Every structure is written in structure tokens, then in C-alpha cells.
Amino acid sequence: MRTRKTMQHPLHGSSVRRAPFAVMPLLAAAACTGLLAPAATASVTWTNYTTANGLGNNRVLGVYASGSTIYAATNGGGLSVSTNNGTSWTNYTTSNGLGNNVVYGVYASGSTIYAATNGGGLSVSSNNGTSWTNYTTSSGLGSNVVRGVYASGSTIYAATDGGLSVSSNNGTSWTNYTTTNGLGNNIVYGVYASGSTIYAANDGGLSVSSNNGTSWTNYTTTNGLGNNVVYGVYASGSTIYAATLGGLSVSSNNGTSWTNYTTSSGLGSNYVYGVYASGSTIYAATLGGVSVSTNNGTSWTNYTTSSGLGSNYVYGVYASGSTIYAATDGGLSVGVTAAAVPGTGVAGLAAIGLAGITRRRRR
Image (tube, rainbow, N blue to C red; front, side, top):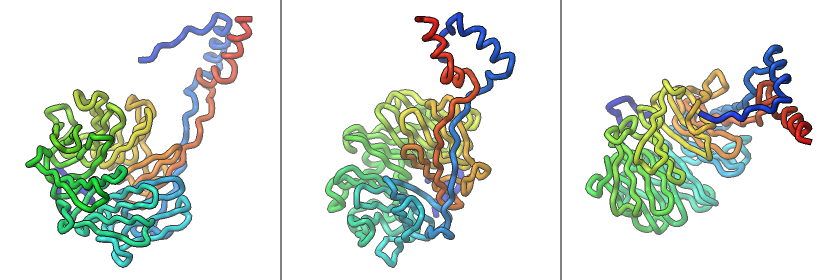
């Protein structure tokens, strides 16, 4: 385990339309009777999976999910996989061909699983875990310590302690990008890619290449990043999300400017280890729980052990539909978001009656 200079990583105003005059008496009455309370919000129910449920180890460093299949990267217990939403688990370790039992990150596509291991290189299975191929420095990888992985088609991206290693032919050959090529730092914690653009979260900021690695642009605190130690990254369109040791840094214009979300913004902790986003919803894995914003960062809801989380130390997060997956220091926590029910506030009144009253007035 490498000791970082900051801390030790376990591995990484809206417009309001005036109500019609006919509705005003109802609003006034509601105000007098206390009906204008805040509308109900969606609730999240958490289930925690540990070694008692079949998980390889209770410290989960990374997570990914697809359909009913969940992949949990554990610290010393190998890669734990459930094909039935957590009901049962299969653990893949060195005895099954995995490079190392400490797995920092995981990704999957179809029947192919990619496991980033500590000292055993990148382990890849093309048959749902039946057999594994290990890619190491002898294969062309930058380092045998792989902290993160992503894949798209036949291209594999491995975040290593010796640079960013990329293979465009399913691992047959590798190209390693380092500071010599313009990378911010050779210790790369996380990686994501979209088209010809590659995002590398590293110990010297966030490095971005828009031409498949030919050249790199490095974003640091000088550019507005929260901290130069970036553990995770995700991107969607022109929006980039960087998990840093100084909060969650978000750019909506491809890195031109950044907005930093910290505890003062409502984040659970300024130590952010992972990030994911879908639409206007952002998920941040922090040392203070899972922080979720459903309005692009305007406000945040923090889920902790008091909410049912396995631990407040969260190292990775992923979401699919209404389900949130959190890799914690106390197991894999899976949260299911219940649909919000109209409350008794203004939103609730609009849902149950104001629209109808307006329509009747217009007849």
C-alpha cells in the first residue's frame, strides 16, 4: 500500500409562475393549516452484503453492476460476483487464476470481466470468470499495480502505478503513457474514456487527451481543481467529474472552468474517492458516506451508517436506474430508491388539485 502525502488511500434560482386567482384562496387556506410543508422526497433503502453473505472480504474497494449481476472488488478476498442481485456470491481468487487477491477496481462488458489487481497486473476473463488471462509488465503494462480499469469495444484502459496503459486489441499489445508523454503523474488511480477522449485521474491532477493519447492537457488546482490528487473520474458530454482530496470538482465546459463541491456545499467529506453521474444526478463516494445530488450539485443528500450503509468510508460508487451500489469499508451496500410520493406541500397540492382547478376555471 502506497502512503500518499495527504492521507493513505486504501488502495483511490428558478422562476415561479403566479397561481391563477381562483386558486389563491386554496393556497391561503393551506398556509393557515400548515399544508405548505416541504413535499415528500424519495427514500433509499440499503442492504449491506458482507462475508456473512458470501462476499470475499468486507473491505470493498470498487464496484460495478450490469443487470442483475454485481461485481465487487475486495481487499484480499478477490473479486466477488453475484448474478442474482446479491442473493449468492462467487469469489474469484488467485486459485481461480486471478493475478492477486487484492482487487482495486472492476469493470465488465457482456461476458468479459476486467479486474485491476495489486501486484498481479490486469486480470481479464472473457467467459464470465471461468478462466483468466493476466496482463503484467511482461505483457507491456506500465506496472503490475493496477488501480483502475475501463474498456470500450476492443480497447482496454488500465490505470497503473507506472502510467496509463492502453491496448486497442484486447490486450495483445499495450501502449504506456507517462509524464514523458505529457501525463500529470505516473501514478494513475482511475480512468474513463469516451470516443477519442481519455480521462486519467492521477497523483498530479486530471490528465485529458482528446486524441487517443497523442497529447495531454493537465488540469490542476491552478486551473480550479479542488486538489491535485485525483482518485476517480467520470465524464458525460462536455461535463467532467473529478473525485479529489479537496472535494468533488465538476466542469460543464470540458475543463475550461471548475466548480468545487465540498462539505460547505453539503458533501459528506472533502475526501472523495469515486464519482458517477447519470443525467442531473451525481454520486460521490466520500469518507463521510455516499453523497447524492439530484440537481447537478445544487444540494446534496448524505447516506451514512445511520442510513444503513455498511461504513462511512466509501471507496467507489455506481448507479443503475433506481439502484445505488457503494463499495464501503464494511461491505457492499446496495441502495434502492423508492419513487417519491407527492407530499402535502406546494408540489403535492399541484399534483392533487391545482391543475384541475385551473382547468375548470378556463372552461
